[in-house]
Amino acid sequence: MKQRPFRQIDVFTATPYFGNPLAVVLDGAGLDDAAMQRFARWTNLSETTFVLPPTDAGRAAGADYRVRIFTPGGELPFAGHPTLGSCHAWLEAGGLPQSGDALVVQECAIGLVRIRRRGHLLAFAAPPLTRSTPSPALVTEIAAALGLSAQQIVTAQLLDNGPVWLGLLLDSPDTVLALEPDHAALKALGHKVGVAGVVKSQADIQLIARSSREARAFNGHDVPVSAEPDLEVRAFAAPIGVPEDPVTGSLNASLAQWLTAEGLAPDRYLAAQGTCLGRAGRVHIERDAESQVWVGGESVTCISGAVTL
Image (cartoon, rainbow, N blue to C red):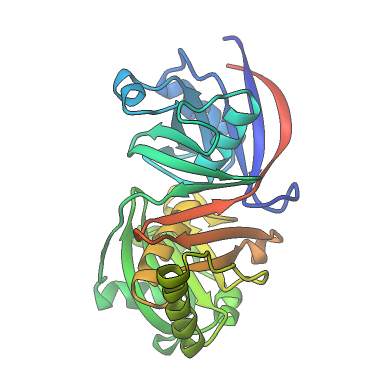
């Protein structure tokens, strides 16, 4: 065992203790899988990351560092808030990107992930999404576990960008916030579930989405994201030991890829998550002219020191 630099970061917030915490071991060299998993169980956070030098192939492809991501129950190929929080910690510890200040490239199990820097805001390029229509029987079972009626579900998709989520678009943010899930039933069903409710009406969303596309096409200017959230999101992950996640980058990425592609959300919007847990997570979404979705947020360091591992 040795002393290793350590940070605990709050992600998707500029105010400490209102986002999603992440443990970051900034020197994971020499640790085996069992040691990483044991420490992740001990922190008891939704995710713990270990920063490592990139592989030779990763470095040749432009990676600045490599990260391994663990939940208390196992390793993940990719996750959003660990990506932003690890990048924040790596930069704060003196990391220097190969390609200049505007872009960091992270290597993880899913491959290379680009992270854009704009002031205090870091945003990752959402990995490719595979989506499909879930069976009606599965949606019915999930709805029962969530306490939803069929009329409250607008549409559903299975979303896979590394982590797999069953995504549900509900009829309103109020429905999202009122959910009191049966977490044991969700665990038995074996599906992580992400739910979202659009603040604005469908007509407003279609108008905003069209205006956003037109502004990007004809004016070349970004359409400013609203100060108030456009979407309310919750994430239930009982199958991996997390009944409700405070703020979830991978879920917000897949929701954004789905909803913007279908015209159910504008190309730029602000999502709120964590409200029911006493948090105030804010996730900035942008779908650029090449249809790449960027998922961003602020991060703040809450604990800085060393850990014996």
